[in-house]
Length: 135
Image 1 (spheres, rainbow, N blue to C red):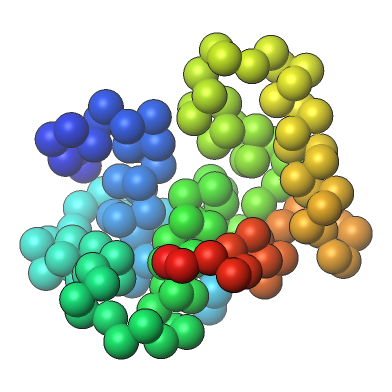
Image 2 (cartoon, rainbow, N blue to C red):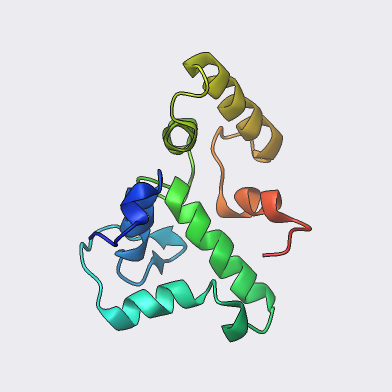
């Protein structure tokens, strides 16, 4: 799937994969097995970010955070590994950081947010990044 100008975004491909996932989430895990969506699905997926459509409920904030979580959860297993975090961050920073600097950021992020000590981020752990943020 391509969307004009999204391909200019360093995460454009990841965003398109999340948008084209059937139902986007099934049992809390991103589904990445579909390459096409119809217009209604596209509008529904993006409507989560439309402030006029929202009633500022916690569920709409959860939907936004879930969308972002799915961008980082490359393999769709419901967890963000160090490797997945590094891949996405590398796309964001391009060559402005060395691999060593990037690895340090990844390790610090996991260390700070990983509450159960498994070395990966679950949705509930990832969500803590956005506490006290206006989404």
